[in-house]
Length: 439
Image: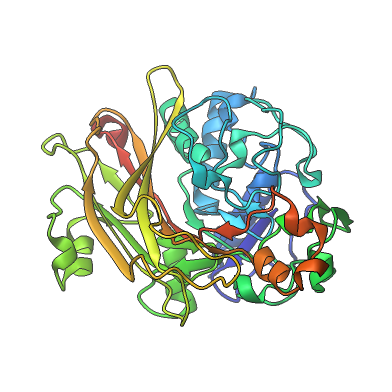
């Protein structure tokens, strides 16, 4: 699945569907020929959609195929041009990361267990470098190429092999709730994601076949997320340009406002400056940008800040993390999660009977962070994850709406989380060594 976004009302006269072409490469070629190169004002971008179900197919690297090298390069460049963004979360689950997949080096990240349709406790087969089947039926193997974090790092490997990074994409989130209620992402007001689970008892019912969608446990679906765009003005032209330059972010629902910049000369006191954002743009690159190698500096500095959702009753922020990805000398994909601001753990336990927001935490967070393990000769990708205090999941609100002796059995299911930690993800910033940047 892809979501196709046009810049304006100048569009091809007839859409192309999966009935016409089953390969995404054919879609990209068609969009380029019929839109971008049509000699009109037509412009377009394509956004991959819920890759967590794709059995490794959404982001299967061209270097894993038998295609000639020139064709691998050409298709990688075409993908980079047509797909500047990717969806990291929606009602069908989180596509950021999953623990325990082969070919990935890094510590266990408990926040990767967030909103998984296939429970983290489920024993699954690892697809490895191969393609699987059955993802939409929640069956078959699970691939690291389903998940944005590992694919962002794989992109660094592809660039070293092919000279182009096909996975240099920014991040958004989405709802896709199949109910026509766009933006209805509040946990306490969730009314289902398919129309067939509008009633509370049906949402908390047993696994069932969802016609036209998948086999799934409705308790594992979620209200979905939101896309954020940093644009100069609220016009279609400006919004589209910001999407093309990847100055975007996604949230799991709350209207958290994150900023993420990198620069060689950022000062540690920037967060206290009234000109912080202006200085960051003047002396660095914003989310979605590329830092070119600079042998004169010890390491780039990253400015990351976030404001909590301003709606009444919103949870406070707990922390900001920076996630780093790189490829080691053995060709392994490495990942590291670093807490850079706030509290590593929530200081108070949430009362899931009342679901009152925790009183601790922060209205805003900001810091300038330098990578102590930076190697100027190694390409890397960085993005920020802003995490709220724990709060009640929609299923807890639903279970609490029944008298204790009338609650559905699923309310006692230990695999159904009672709490969540809502979050936002910024688009990445890429560091490229001087040789890569020049090549």
